[in-house]
Length: 187
Image (cartoon, rainbow, N blue to C red; front, top):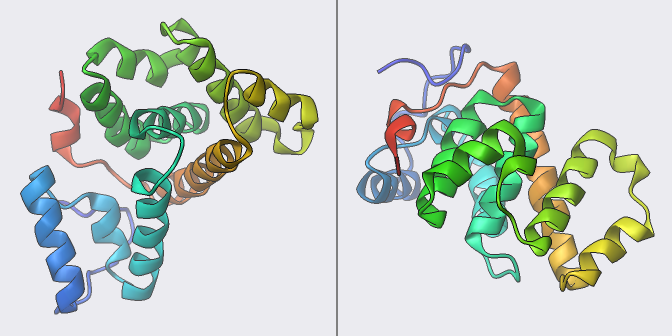
């Protein structure tokens, strides 16, 4: 197995029992331990902070579907050219949507995808947040409300986009590589 990043960050050994259990669940459900988790496992406190934030943003209660959150992850990652996240979350979009083309379209240029007005407004906001967050004004938030998003949903859109802007930068700076398995999922 190759290193998950260009850095020499060995996983804690032994892993704490809670971490080993989490990794075992990943192996069982995903057929792998994502490289991002292996990289963070060099510092269990950072791993726990990362997984708590990820699990809340991507799996926690929200007015956004899991697919919509993955779409935001891919939109942001495409702008930031994050190889790891485009591969991993592109696979998630393919799997959750049942549409292999949708994952690829959002990876390449989300504007070519057949999206509804809600999804278009959501990705327009996520894109602006990624390239010019200081330029977001009330009319940008109102555009989301106009297609049915609540203020809590807008909070979730902003947090998911913000999370991926952070993780994209970490992944790119450390040359984090996606697990090979992601490349063939849901095709």
